[in-house]
Length: 80
Image 1: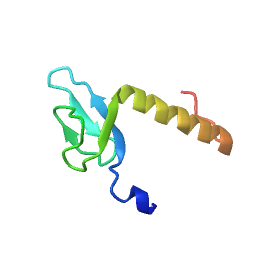
Image 2: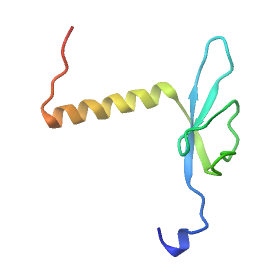
Image 3: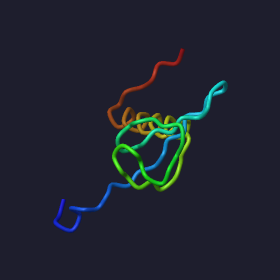
Image 4: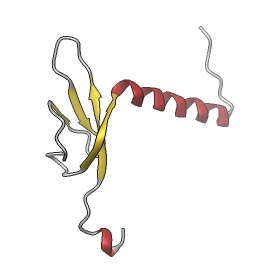
């Protein structure tokens, strides 16, 4: 962290969790706090938000990274 980044706010995005019987929740990617709405800045950590992505997309990205890591380490998933 340099001198010029001292006063800059972090950037993040909202992770939208859709629910069937309730309102959608929005989780900050920087601090992890959940809110009922998605403002331009996180009320808790003050991070500037670049947009919203779905929870499903985040899970798919994590699974893809996990599969790549397993291939790198030579681990194979069991087929049930």
